[in-house]
Amino acid sequence: MATTKWSLDLSHSELGFKIKHLMISNVTGKFTEFTAEAETEGDDFTNAKVVANINPASINTSNEQRDEHLRNADFFATESHPNMTFVSTKVERVDDDTFNLFGDLTIKDTTKPVKLSVENNGIATDPWGNVKAGFSISGKINRKDWGINYNAALETGGVMLGEELKIQGEVQLVKQA
Image (cartoon, rainbow, N blue to C red; front, top):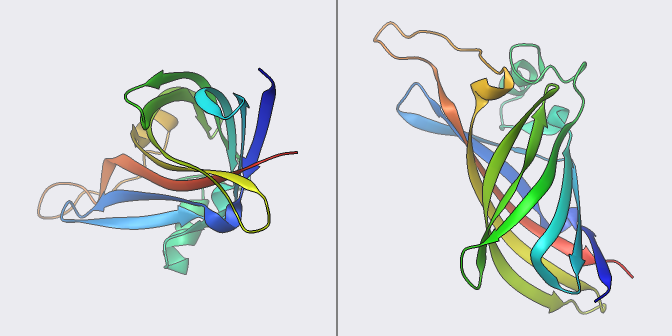
């Protein structure tokens, strides 16, 4: 079977996250600049090879002051680390529409393995003849595993930020000719 190449349709994709704040609520954000490519055998994503690149400077939490803090050395250090990457290492089928995507995530020159849950939402052809595949992605990482350690103790006990970061994404890929 022939190898099929897919690339990200950014206008129909989003990559977001949420983290506990003050231990009572979640703050959400997203990255507005990222790319993804996949190689499959035909249209079968069960053995896909996936590479994604994320510009951490594109972080948007709807609060410019917070976004600037997230870009500095306390968090992503975007001037010295302008790229985050994900490279898949294995796909594991869970059921007909769901699989686990294992890979290496690099943030700030630290690479660690991660597992993402991926729901395959199907393949469709748009009105202009482009074949597209859609996926919902979720996962959890501990930000301290990548050296993102900033926090502040609260007077009432506890800390300002949780360690667990929940990842969520909606991704649409377009088949390349």
